[in-house]
Amino acid sequence: MSADGGAAPAGRGGAVEAAVPPGREAAYTVERLDRAEDVPRQVWDELAPADDPMWGRDVFAAMQRAEIGPDAYAYLLVRRDGLPVAVLPLSAVRGLRLDRVVGPRERRLMAPVTRAFPRLLRVPMLFCGNFLGQGHVMGRSPLPAPAARLLVREVMDFARDHRLGTVVFKDFAPHDLDVLRPALEAAGFFTVASLPDTQLNLGHADFESFLASLPAKPRRNARNKIRKFRQQEDLRMEVLDGFGHLVPEMMGLYRQVMDRADQTLDVLDEDFVRALADGADTGDGEREVTDQRLVACFEGDRLVGYLHCLFRGTGAVGARIGLDYGLAHRARLYHNLHYAAIELAIGRGCRHIRFAQTAYEPKREFGCELVEQSYALTHTGRLPRTVLRLLLPPALEAAREQALAPKS
Image 1 (cartoon, rainbow, N blue to C red):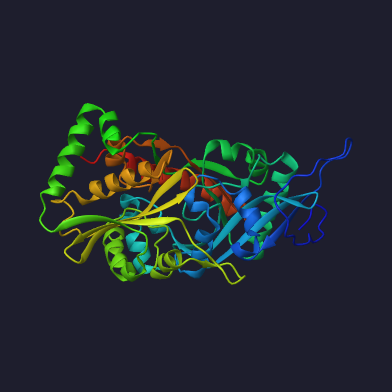
Image 2: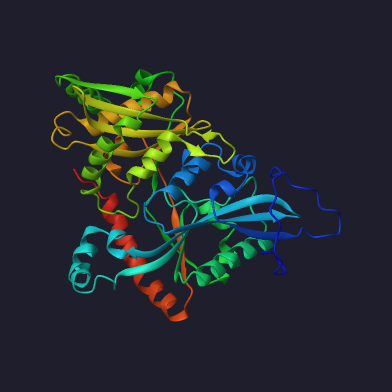
């Protein structure tokens, strides 16, 4: 939709900004697209975060082919004088289970209601940004105020058109929200701290140099855990380029992890992992393949643990982990999978590697920094918006404090 309500034509050019003649303001339009593949690859690659593997177009295409939570997707393409300058992905979840996004204490309190009225705690929700990663509006430069207002208005129109009452800009860093904040506040949004991301900054010559850079106690703990792993008979660590044949075993190990998770907003399925392993169909007879490796641990020929690693530019992500809890503790499997991923990222020249929003204590010991993030939330209805503003921040803050609290 354009600023004056007219339809904006689809384009196939690159994301190159045109100079605006003096005395004339730029004209911004927003177009809704149904699939990631509808955004030309050149445009996507120029606008997406250069060093965040979760923002590859192939990752979004894999999400669309899977059943990981959202029921529908859309992409808002912002044009400046007809040329693409920004993209905001949308993920629509028509029946989000609230007990999956709060902490254990709140989940226990909700349990009687969930059993008696299973549909009562399911809410339709629109997520803006990346359902599986850190939130961004894709673009080379911050959106000016008129474009931000138009984009937020289009988000709210989409939510109303699809009867998605709650709208969330998910896991946005403060600086990414700042340019949107006036437009969001005008639309009734409020912000709440979400779970932080974990990022390990690299730049070491090799893995031994990384270990040497750790403080004394974490360094001793790391060497001890590596030694315990090496003492296990018949366990070996491998880095695999191709792993499609292992996907069924991976999912069994992944389910063991998810069964123990405090929060399960997104649960990956076999279709998603296989789509990433196989690559995405670009529509022109080629396949768009994710730069990825599987850090895999085997006991004999049996897969007993893995960390699925994605790469983009100088960034890496340990996207999802799977563990056989029958031997995970005695083999210090969780730590050693991460050590292997760190060594892999260093060898590839990555400047940082990110891990999931879980298990903060061991990740602090690895040397990870916490990357602060926030939700911006609202509701399309005035009364539900008031209730949301009263009830949701305390519940999310309690879940956040519990997740960050030391466990040892």
